[in-house]
Length: 352
Image 1 (tube, rainbow, N blue to C red):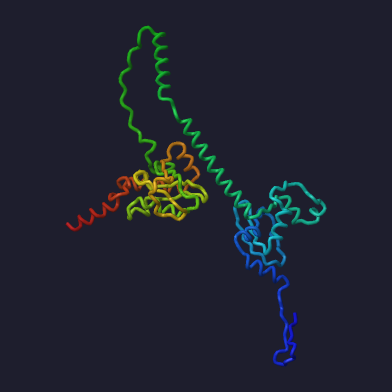
Image 2 (cartoon, rainbow, N blue to C red; image 1 turned 60 degrees about the horizontal axis):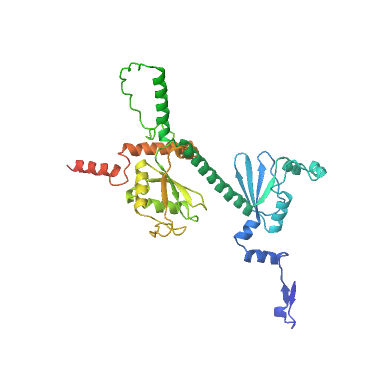
């Protein structure tokens, strides 16, 4: 666009102003760039690993590729929302595989044919996040339901066995008029270690798992670790709490402790000191009893077994070794005992 000087002054005769063809759209995108627009213009694409690489012509589109083992997840950040919406409409997520809209065009285009064959689908990022949250909530609900059902099946009526034994004894007494001779006393059986005792051959550490309720849904693992580690002394804060298993948006979590002694210490602390997490980044907690306080319970039995089955074998083995090592040091005490007390005694002996 030319702009000139009406006076005709030779020092300022005018010039050309060059603008982008889509300059207004570029300015609008720069001014109104926020998370909502970014999610609207971003799509998720699922492609089979054996499909060839698709060229994107000469468009400058930011692309992220994740290899999940059997699928490739490709994330496109389009320049505008129209291209993203068009891609979602043409390759709808609920599209049935094997249904060809235009068979002639599919036969002539190899890439298009392969995309239909291997179930190519596209989804907006915002919708993908909704499905992810729905899946996590459903998974937690199913785990709690299975655990509750297992606990109900394990409950046994204590008077049922007594009634059965009494009926069996009375039935035998009617059949045999003379009681049979008593057998000689047997030697007491050898004592076996309790199933709750953790050894190097255990599949998982027993008594080291706590279920916590009433945490803030907007918190994170780092904040929860700091909040719960305050129950231990300074020298034990990085040792007692092994891992925080928390999912964003939930009001509950699991805590993995190093030893059963740390589990008992943590439960006693929050029982004696009711604590409420008032906001997502609260690392100290509030002692206001009018608000729902943090509630803890030890996970044992079938629930404990089901939880540890979801944990990778390497992580389980490390947790078992840590628990056995802590128990061998005198129970892994969370107070003044343990390794710190042994070091003090060693220094005293050297001084003598």
